[in-house]
Length: 298
Image (cartoon, rainbow, N blue to C red; front, top):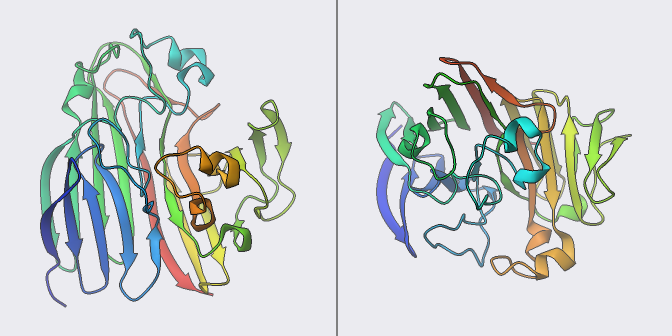
C-alpha cells in the first residue's frame, strides 16, 4: 500500500490540504480546521460539500465538519453557565472557532494513515470576549475510517463551562429515503415546537424540516441509506447529546450557500455537548470530544 499524498490547495480565500490514499480522499481547510469533504474511493461521498459553498475568510463553509466552540448555536439559548462567561458585544452563532485560521502543528504519515494536528492559538486568552485560557486542539486521522478528536484543556485558574459540537454534514442519496438508527426511545428537544421535550418512538425518518437535540445518546448512531446500499456509522466519545438537522425546502431557499434542492442530499448529525451535557473544566482539566466515521454495505 502506497504512502498517502498531501497537497496544498487554494479554494477561494481559504488555504486547504487534500490528502489522498489508496482508499480515500480528504479535504481540510486551515480556517476552522474544518474538514470540507471525505470520500472512500469508488463510493459516494461520506461528508457533504454544498455545491454553492462559499470559501470566504471569517465564514464557515457549509460542508464537512465545522467545529462549534466554546458554545453551540445561539449563545443566549445556552445555559447561563455558558453564556454568562462571554464578555463581548457580538456572539456569533456556534462560537468563536469556525471563522478563524488554526495553526497546523504537523502532518504525520504513518503507514497507510495520515494524521493532521491543529491548534487555535487565540483560544489561550486572545479570543474577543472570551476571558479564559483553554488550549484547543483538533486531531484528524484518515485511515480505514475518519476520526476527529477535539481536546479542550483549561490552562487558567478559573472554572470553565463549554458547549460544543462537531457539526457534521453527511452525504445521502435523498434524505427522504434514509433513516437514523440508535435514537429509538431517546428523549429529544423539538426546537421547532417551542423547545418541547418529546420521546422518539422508532428510527428517525424525514418528511419535513428537522431540528432536534437528542439527549443521553448512545456511543453509536447510524444513517441507513438503502438507495446507496450503505450504512454510515458514527462512533462518538465524550458526548451524550446529538443535534439532528435538515433545513428542508423553505429554509434551504433562504441559504445563499445551499442550492434550493441541496437539502435532499445532506443530513446533519452533530456530535455534541449541549443542553444538560455541558463540559465542565476545572483548572488543569481536559476533555476530548471524539467522532469516528465509517461505512459498510447493507
